[in-house]
Image 1 (cartoon, helix red, strand yellow):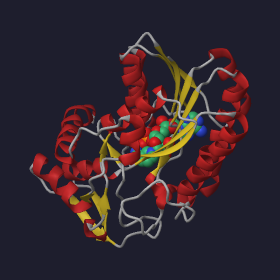
Image 2 (cartoon, protein in one colour):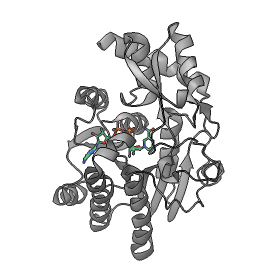
Image 3 (tube, rainbow, N blue to C red):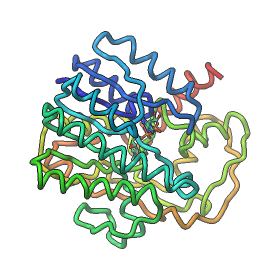
Image 4 (tube, rainbow, N blue to C red):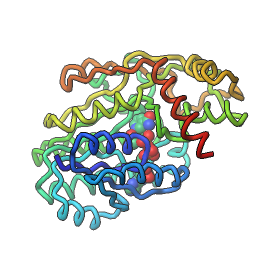
Length: 320
Ligand SMILES: NC(=O)c1ccc[n+]([C@@H]2O[C@H](COP(=O)([O-])OP(=O)(O)OC[C@H]3O[C@@H](n4cnc5c(N)ncnc54)[C@H](O)[C@@H]3O)[C@@H](O)[C@H]2O)c1
């Protein structure tokens, strides 16, 4: 299969591109290497991927509509895993225009380019559990209307999900939405909690712990997420929205303690009130993913935290 992985220099995208390249798919990665976090981390991911002869990187911006048309025309992809995005809830509150440009308009450019090229049989879109906002339906289930997003990141992702339906309806476009739940693991994003806690433990940096860590997150190990994306890439489903989580949430406070126990040191945490853009509870109902994709997450939180810490202490601390 010839696959375009957008956001391939990022956390989940690089893990996905490597999984596909390792099993022999023809993989084109796309990324603009922006500086939302240290681009050196993205270059390191790219270098890892460049070791595979069946991988190549297109350094491009998904806001470049003409560029997207030219790329799709030239490469004739069979499938697209669209992960490029401005992620980060708090940053979205500061830059709502950027989030709409990249996460909604950029997605539309890719969909139009895919349609024009005519080769793409399946388009898989990375969405987020943030679209559930402060829903009262727990665990989060795909039938929830999700029409009250708490910030522009979630709003732009939800808008793209809905636009995908129109394209499916009008043009018979296969569009699968995967809503990821709090992903963590090797090559993790430095602005996310797992990485921040590790930094705090090793460097003593003060970090905020919202609500004293009294919030549940459905932590999902990146290997499980990339397995789910591969399953979705292999199965065009018309139009579906599917949660990809672990379905077994852990208190943030307990997650932090697992890392502290492994490190044998405490993090420097300062309790702060929860931001209004953040939700209290996050728990996936993954029965649809099990039924439609055969998705079956394998990595417990204890095991995932151990593997994350192993990576952080071996790779991040070595490169520091
Ligand atoms: N990490 C999570 O817990 C999580 C949860 C829910 C959803 N997601 C979604 O999964 C996807 C991947 O997230 P991630 O955590 O790997 O984030 P990431 O920031 O590490 O990866 C996103 C990549 O997209 C690239 N990118 C951003 N804007 C671009 C543009 N205009 N053109 C080309 N490339 C661009 C970035 O440079 C980055 O490498 C995103 O769509 C995100 O919204 C992530």
